[in-house]
Length: 195
Image (cartoon, rainbow, N blue to C red):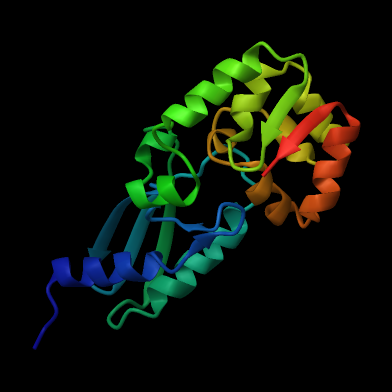
């Protein structure tokens, strides 16, 4: 029985769900990076984007995607078409990816904590809130993060893309930092860090 193009495209999509972004630990499909799959007689073209231009993971993702798609019976050639429009944003992520990364509607408790923290002079941060939140709240946060080794935060556009989903816990994992040591360095910079 011959596999239809739609069935083949679904198989490709399933394989792509096995390819994780190593920084965010979410697959490229649920991150919303895959824009299209075109099939033509054993040739597959995957149209995709990245969370930010100049993403250091583009080579890794390129290889991982090609390897995964070539595992689909009937596919013998894979090309990746990288596009920048439409621009990727957190809105492109699936609900499960948002939940996995701790993004979504704030609870009443979190909203109350924000109100209480806004009158405090101590710079309070936690390990599960996206770093963009803290960069918006504390003007020196990005510089402080860069000075303790999280230098990717200074890549143009990084805060407005990956920073909207990356939190301290994920960031320390992605950079290979010990979370406890990372928290201590932030506390030395005047932040109060909570889990």
